[in-house]
Image (tube, rainbow, N blue to C red):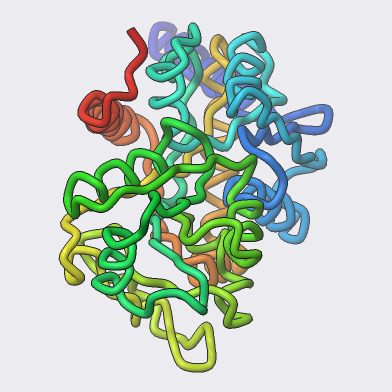
Length: 328
């Protein structure tokens, strides 16, 4: 009986300890770090999360957005790497975590950080000015006929926008002059102002100028059309945009939107943020944002997230190598 009672007491002690450990939560404001400039998709998503957490009282401490897009996003990556053990900083990550270390040879690997969750998948759309070609076929024909390469805007040299531009050249034989800007918002502005002929932007980055009739969505780089059927412009929904494959350019690419903590945080701190961002994905703000910005809602954590990251890392490395963007 004494042994049983002793085991019971020990069990209670363990349960109490576990409950105490799982009760960890931030005691000061949490910084959501954005590896890009103002107005881009990462900035917009970070502010949606900030609002969702505040409106739904998901965390006692406030969340503040910190833009660290310097050096094409390397500022944010190195900032997170140097913050080992700090549970009050969380990075909103995208394919930059794979591509930038390859192209710029910065001493960073996503494995230096603590994975929390993949919270969405983002797509890329080929856009041109409303006064430009009306179809992909017309756009490629114009590019081939131009006396100099058409100016293609994007966010970050030797990154996903640039990779897609290179693969468009390989698939079509057209030539483009890629111009990187500080954010997708700036790339959109440059297209509207006719400083570029086209851009490869996330849906959210060109949403307002598309709705205003200033740009045209030519095709989406995915194997299937965007699912949302509610009209965004007077005549079109996201689902009305054909895939690039439908239009003769067989190129697909999806980009993760994921949350990471610095390295060397505790399992209890990691668990707090897994729970927090899972709750975010259940809010009206998140669901509304997914549809309006044409993202694919997902939630991956734990071993499932690690498996995805390993496969996505390998895919991005392969694309970067084929595009000739891996630094020697």
